[in-house]
Amino acid sequence: MNLSSADYLSYGLGTPDFVDVGEYKVHRDVVPYLEKLSALVASHGFSLRIESAYRSFERQLSIWNRKACGKLPLLSAEGVPMPVPSDEEELMYAILTWSALPGASRHHLGTDLDIVDANACPENYEVQLTPAECDGMFAPFHSFLDQVFGSDSSFGFNRVFVPGRGKIRPERWHIAHLPTSRQLLDKFSLDALRHIYENTEIACKQVILARLDSLAEEYIYPYFI
Image (cartoon, rainbow, N blue to C red; front, side):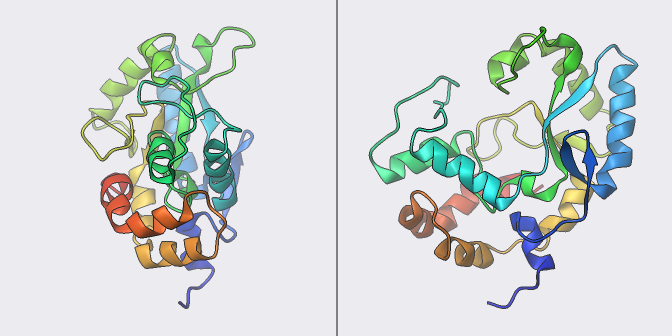
């Protein structure tokens, strides 16, 4: 398979042309719209803070493999820690509840952000990015964002992981700049992802390769909006 370095960017590989926003890297084209969204939420008493943005393939692979071996918490659909299954297929689906497949994560694009309201964080609080936080301390922030994303003043941002779309659990903290991400997702190829996996040490490798077509229909393509 002949792919240029630019063709690999949507998989979190290569050298993307991103800019630093605080300690995180964000796609250059997203920054002006992010500044407008930040100013809007600030005018209503909130402080948009990024908790995660661009992740390389290697970073997402590390998250995946560490969850598979128990070095990172594996969470149930309810968001509580669960034992690591011994069956590889069961383990794969357990990881997919909250984590994207390496190479198919929207965080590879630099257009997607995990955000919180910094004003609502208690001092020295370590953000977990869980549904409980969204329904608790960050509830007013997300309620305001609901209004923004339902209007014509969202600057191109919206949520992607929402109820009824695919099998990944809803993530209210995850937002995407859709006009920019759509341009990058046009380059995505499942055959290229398969090729990457064949040459990668990834946990549950054989079952991933065997189920890749159905995984794409349930865990990848529903979120390429």
